[in-house]
Length: 249
Figure 1 (cartoon, rainbow, N blue to C red):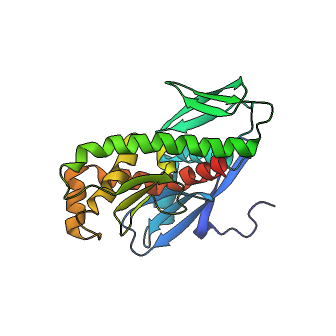
Figure 2: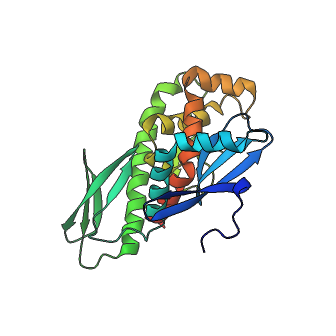
Figure 3: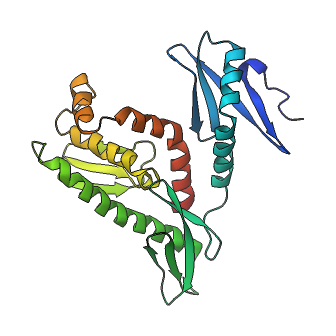
């Protein structure tokens, strides 16, 4: 029987047609408002300690369609890695572009305006495809972030020693002691302003190596909508990282 040990105070079931999933509720003493988040186990509701069950259910009702879309995307991501020749779409800065497959003598991947071209040979494997996808995204990301960084460098005391793009387990970006910026390759799945916010965040650490009010002042001067972009990553970040693990291994 579904949810025999589920308690109403801990969440609620959402049902549609023959599907249903459990939406956990997490009360938090510091929460100031109701907020839906998407984690590695799917959506959850965070709510202030004193919000009533009635208010929580009304809030969920208002966001039912969004919840179902997130749940569907979450379950899709749990599927097996991309296989050669299958119908698929790959993320690109908030879009999902279809894949076109081509028989060739070697494995290589190209992104064109509205689709991806993936060339494979009879000797190509799904594991090799994963490695090629990661390398392709890293190369595209390296060029994109370096190009975007140019407009900010004149406002900084120095340039970063290097900008690297690679998979990061939990962080979106970092600046190390040698002034090298590392950015998560999964940022190429998020909308461009969100990815650029993370770049700005790390560049501002060249000015303030902390998260003090002075640091956030520097960020806001260059990215006034940074709070919206940070909220986007908090909401959609776990789903984005899960898809990166599926595609890249």
